[in-house]
Length: 206
Length: 394
Image (cartoon, rainbow over all chains, first blue to last red; front, side):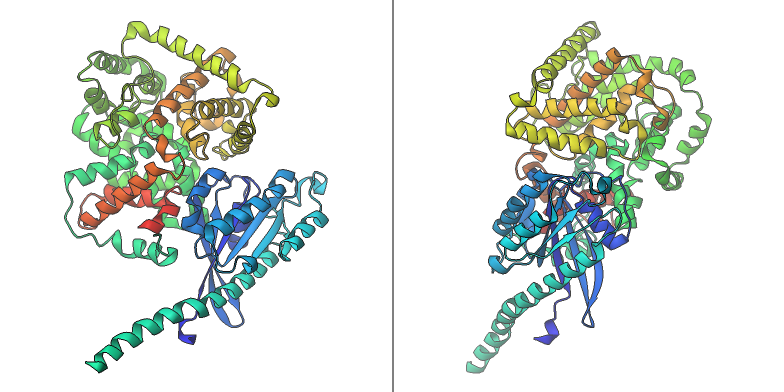
């Protein structure tokens, strides 16, 4: 149904506390970086208009709190996501190790219709820190993990310097769009047919 | 169970808030007031910063609305119940200003002048905190005296404090009576628990010093027992919690250099960690760090002059810092006693408030209700980041 074209794409950003989720979102949407962000409480979102193949989409980016406690609220805002962005800090092994948990937690909470093909994108952030000298997670290691989870697209970013942020979100938007469109064909159509045809047919028979 | 997100949020902003049906009752007014009493009792920057961050990110109206809620409060209740003490009301604003940050000042002043110009004028007049300190000592005594009469304690003290506590009295008054608990108990939002409506310091002046000393020692013992131990003696959960706190301390009030001092951050860390260990039902939850900052600033203001921006922790003796740290810990504990379920799993306390708010908005016509403050408070609550995920239910 071309008239019911989807225009809102929902993206969730997940990752450990302090890896730079808020910074990435703000760098992408507002082209600004601040080292004065406070910890995100609960969740927050920003929207950005993106153009893709002559169509305009609203990217709704949900920035979540890194602390596990807030994941109890996950169901409410994971639901209906079109793409999930997993962020880790290349200078923190723990934040990388936790990617697996974040991914699994997301799949459980959001319960997408096709978990194996749900689009994730992984971002290794803070590559600018200390000129890369404090880095503990190698690109190779990260790419290997991404490959093992069904070839998740991977980007190395710096929210501070704005490195790769635009490219990463382009990819995120593209993947969100793909998953969003597949969903669209499946869901709204069935509901529409049921609503419009049933009353009419019963009216005729009377 | 949970409806789809996006349309519901739109529905909230677009219609429900503004299209109530029934006219407002006094209960409704007080309810909203108290949902948020915490946010404006602790006038400090802890709560104003999220608004600021939001301002730079997304929505200007949020910040506009976050400020007027306190000035009308002060203006209104001051004129009702506290005639002849205009400089008392004034003082709180003065402490607030440096801490709310310069970017907010224009905004605050603008809104203030529209609601109460008394505040502006007396603010300018008020130059010497030491001068007023002497004349206000009677007022401090009044607070203390009120507290010694058990049946009128809350009523009277709340009435006095409602119009604003002069900054230099806050350390004493806040220790004596934590308004948040008293207020919430009074309106039966929370069941009145034993001692929950009492402050950290006992109202009886004979006992106060002794109890303070004992409480402080108790805190130091806790720190020694829980915080000052090697990581090997901590469980994995405790290590994670400490790590989380260590990540958040540098991000607490990030735009005020005072809070960037190592010693201040260490105090904050000790307070938060000790509290978290002793409250395993919730543990440390992001955001609790912001609740400590008003206590820190108020108690430190006894010893540091001028604006928070110019403070240096090096100007206070280590003993005093320890005492203040302990007091902050106990005040934080007391404050959170009444709302720990805001921080436990699935945040039932917040869910309850959101559902009550939903009920309230259904019953009142927010626009027809003449008091602008109510609208501001409702909007402010809806902008609370903790509530964001719960808007799905509205």
